[in-house]
Image (cartoon, rainbow, N blue to C red):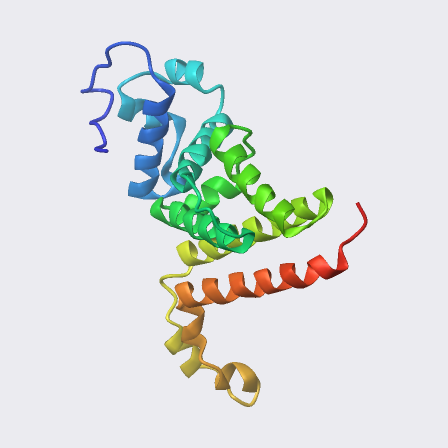
Length: 217
């Protein structure tokens, strides 16, 4: 969506809608990062005054929760009729893509605590897969949080590390002090697609093994 001119030149017609506020907030973050988002700047962009904005969202935390749901909504959709592992892989890929499509998407979602439809639908789908895998209800919750935390952490790393020159870092490492770092290919740290695939496969292998040693309910 396009960002409107400041409120000084843009007059609003009618009440603010939640989806309009959220879409505008996400667009502002895409332009300047999460730090640039303030309620004052948002109200100016919407062509309104802060009190009108606070009638839609009582505080910035409530707005961020709604923004997180909007980001996660990008991962929703029918799942294939497949085994539990395939469904987890599909959901993991969708979640990662949804986070990466939005600037600072991982930070927005990681700092939110929502119980709205997108968040609940994703959690329910993952729990369904873990239940099919044979985990107890408690272990299924742990399995879901393990997968989700990995996805969130990898997206956070990717969105915050793209400007690191690891070749330069490696060239300045004294091999006598850090022999292992000097020997290994540090640029592989920025191969985010490959490291995500490796990490997810490792977690899935661990979940398969954990089914044989189920913790007590």
